[in-house]
Image (tube, rainbow, N blue to C red):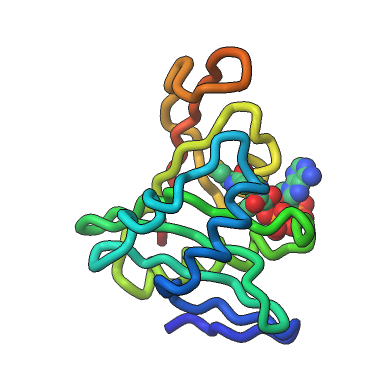
Length: 155
Ligand SMILES: CC(C)(COP(=O)(O)OP(=O)(O)OC[C@H]1O[C@@H](n2cnc3c(N)ncnc32)[C@H](O)[C@@H]1OP(=O)(O)O)[C@@H](O)C(=O)NCCC(=O)NCCS
């Protein structure tokens, strides 16, 4: 397994069903269109490798990932707003890349709103490249916006 502990009293560990309440609280504060609790429950199980980031015994971030054959789909990644901009997103993504390589995966796919420049900058810093634009894919408060499909080819 990739190293789970860092020197900042942080651990990244598999998400448990009992984490979903805390995950859902972060989800509601992180997105304009958050996942429902039920969506987290259905994105759980054998082909998922969901993890949470714990800092000082508090759950402050998570990712949800599914995998089929050599391909991983990053379905959700969030850091609690109070802790954003402190390199925790980078830690989660770095962990996911290492874990995927360890599991023999060859690529990680994701979709992101065009307006989410923070997430796009993070993904680009991990060598994700834009593969396709899905026009008007996401609902917004007053219309639709494009989704950008990105892929990171693992080496
Ligand atoms: C996207 C998200 C996971 C990033 O996590 P984070 O902990 O805030 O990000 P980090 O501190 O690890 O920053 C990593 C990189 O992201 C980019 N970034 C972070 N904050 C940024 C900002 N305010 N503006 C632009 N880029 C930013 C930078 O490239 C940064 O790298 P650098 O510090 O070397 O410049 C987090 O902001 C989040 O949870 N957002 C809400 C949910 C979301 O949009 N998830 C993605 C859905 S596709």
